[in-house]
Picture 1 (spheres, one colour):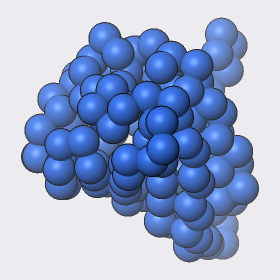
Picture 2 (cartoon, helix red, strand yellow):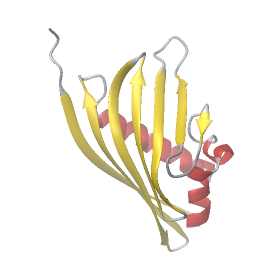
Picture 3 (tube, helix red, strand yellow):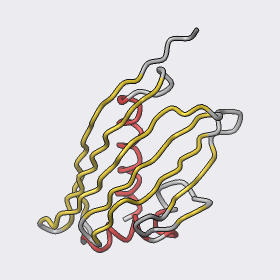
Picture 4 (tube, helix red, strand yellow):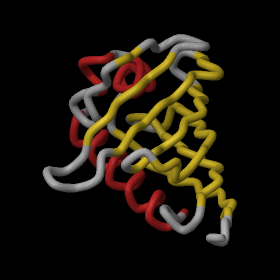
Amino acid sequence: MTERIVKHATFAIERTYPASPAKVYNAWADRSAKEKWFSKPEIFEFRVGGREYSAGGPPGGPVFVYDACYQEIVPEQRITYTYTLDSDGTRISVSIATIELIAADGGTKLIFTEQGAFFDGHDTPEIREHGTNELLDALGRSL
């Protein structure tokens, strides 16, 4: 029998963007704005209880499936969602993520906090944090 393991971890990333909280919030809440820096979803229902779903990956590589459910939304202040991530049909993690938006001099301070369970060595907190940093950099470029 294959040994099954789970690694729990939390990480937080901060960014300050030269854009208003409304504009940063819109980059998460509006489908076309989010597609500029995140994957293009097959389902995008930005509301409490709504779902965001996308599947894809690099040519010849694994197919990743991102399946999220919005748990709390406070316009221009906070977004909390839970999500699963699968790779080629194998569940690799389950997470809760919170985005906080705080008005700052000349822009918005964003705090992204993720708490995750990473399964059987298929994914690690370090890999996820690195990928999230890249996404937040892309968000900054899109603003």
